[in-house]
Image 1: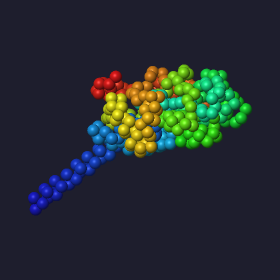
Image 2: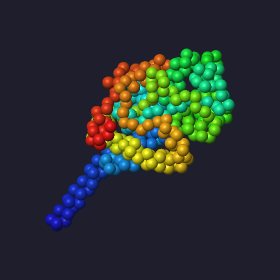
Image 3: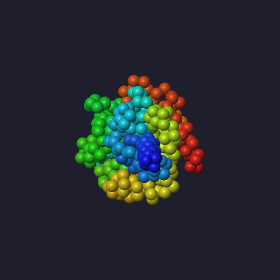
Image 4: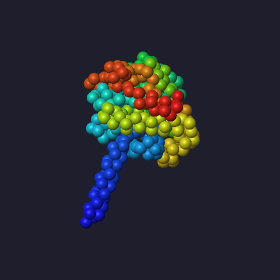
Length: 330
């Protein structure tokens, strides 16, 4: 009888221990919101090597960055990858999040129809229909370029430029190819694909405004950063490792993005041309998020209730710095 009771207690102890281990593993699941772009590839790659860091990355791909933050606001997403403008708008409308790294930069082109050979610069788009995706990095970069060249714009006729907005990036290419619009501001690799297909010609890479080259931030909820600090630290180590793998091994980056992210629908040349206009990175330059905020306020983007006042209140790179030092990156 004693032996049976001892055996039963031991069995219960084993079950309790397994249950506790299961709970610990569940706490290390990290829910990622991501986008399907060539320069977002290292973020997707995080899920492939996550087990090495005691993590499981549950990735959900959204149509555009603005779609991620409502899910983040209701605790359905822990970390996200998007344009700086999306993060600013979310923070400015009460979503409790921090910028913890910068995973890529560049990735924008302004294109025209090939038959519009009189359009050499943005000065020449007066009177034309110009399209982009609302609420994306491309939206902000386009308005900054138009502003730089003294252009006025509206979604209705009557200004220098009539803006046409689409809900996704594939529709932009289709609209240009069918000559529904004259000019588009597009991401990568969709802009490269439009050029290689023959229905687009580059006008400019819009990096010559005070915003500079746009940086894509990795964003984390305040809840994860504050309440799960050990998991948050592991996420940043994982991010740095995935990014370093792509930077150190371009062949790995190309293979993964082309075969896993784009399922074979992106050619080698288009990947390389697209990444010639973008870069995998780790950092957010000092002041970049605030400059982005200032220009969004200027153009009325994001409809923010309380725009961020300074980078100091929500750009937190301490975990990134530790991860970079540990993995000896520059």
